[in-house]
Image (cartoon, rainbow over all chains, first blue to last red; front, side, top):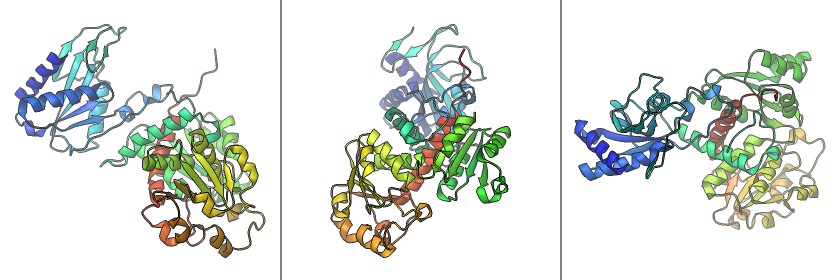
Length: 158
Length: 312
């Protein structure tokens, strides 16, 4: 997992034309710790602190009215100005793409980012929306019946 | 924590974990209120009806704004401008609202039990915005949210509620909530308005204001509910202010970090000295701001619970 994050950090630096504009946003709950780890790696490589926030997408989910019970809302904390930034969403698992859609619509409530990219530790396939990741730690083909669980410090695939 | 209630009728019904869950959820909405765009799509397409059979400005406005910020549509119905003046019963009014596909009814009524009456008969979410002298659950929740923000906890704190306890739904909701979460509650005021029976709810009753507020971490002041008093409960407003009002002299002898709270509307110079209402330790206006976040949390939670299918 550490190697995957290190490689992703290098890819982010390589493909960025202006490191100073990058800001990471971890998606609650699995993406938050990963975003912090990735931010630390970026700082190691570039020598500059990278802004890092967290976003709770609960209120922007498209399945709220289909659920029997309300999902638990978590904290959003974005302390930097989003406008003009190169935002990179960080999440643990990319699956249907619906969380990413919710995150994209929510982040525009904070401002207008110059660009939004997506970094995920695991891409398990089965997209339901036209969304793809820009930085992927590992591709793990799965069936829809399987579950992927990521622990922020090491990966366990069930 | 799984939230499973479609209605919020009384704090008395809630488990401590449910109260904490509402307060935690309200934290999320507190953050939304600080954004450039103070709105989330959580209740898009839902309709909330403010059914206010008893007048109110702050609670109604707060619920209305909370619904708007959740992207719900809002209809306001006031007693004076509705068919209630033409003799329609509460149940029929509510059934009509349900037939219009309202999803949430927020009700304020002068009779205790009005909210429960509707909740038992309707499929829509019913939120109690004050029923007679029974309960005003969202007020107690926003008071608790404010205490948590300022003091970091509720358990173990000394909270003194001072004023007209007998006729106050705010007092009853607060007593239930605070005792459930482990605070020590002291009630104070004229003996006609603070009967000893309240001790059965787990409170200390005290008729000396200085003594009641000496160890208080929070002093919650209540207005005299003239509209509910059927007889004169104390000689005069002036005498009340002298004996039971929170004056500068009395406040100077409290804990240096004691907070002043008040659910509003405040009567300056009666229950509270005018300067004290505006002082740094008064959190009266912050309570109003927190009310928005708390009501968003309540609306989000209750309106997101689907009606239970008939058990198979």
